[in-house]
Length: 292
Image (cartoon, rainbow, N blue to C red):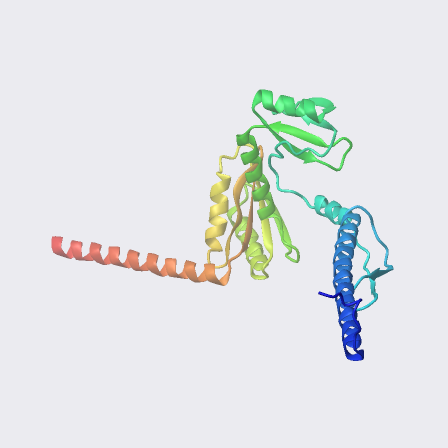
């Protein structure tokens, strides 16, 4: 078979071969361009992602390759993942064991009895934790070095309950908390006056912290006084924080206004209670009539 180069070609055949050569050339150029754009985008995408995690960029113009256009200009926004993580670390973490995650090299350690063990390397603190079967809890991270404490699981649980109770009794933003304090030896009419004052504050949806001091020589049960106040205000108030001993000779509680749902439930209970009392009274009357 004779080669094409060695034979004479007609003008039509020559033109056809030139067109086919041009088409193949264009096809290979397009494939090369697509591959180049793909790998370029992948390279710049990885480069920008890695760099963004380490450095803070101020707004600037960058050229981003695009397969359809020669260049695309875009304005990037300033950002920094380090700042975000730093802001997240500023949020107050829940009280509990930190496990072995200690970001500080040097820390101040307190043992389970509240005694200071001084400053030490985190490796030493972890060693003590493992030796005694205890847990590490972060107490303060706004000091240098940060303060950690070795605690048992029971100690952590009790402290969590205390903090939850304290948070519960703390007034919410926008809620006014009034305070009232008196002695356990308070006279009956004075207690009635205090209770009326509490009722006025409760009607205004205020929280009321009541503190009772144990008077010398007084045998009055302060918890019974709290219950008496609540019973007087049973149509309005309930405990936000139940009565507890704040310190020796001093007990406190916090009262709040009942919600509509709680008020309806209370009314249902009262109706049920009254019906039960009436039924018992009717039974007693019938029993007396039979005996007569």
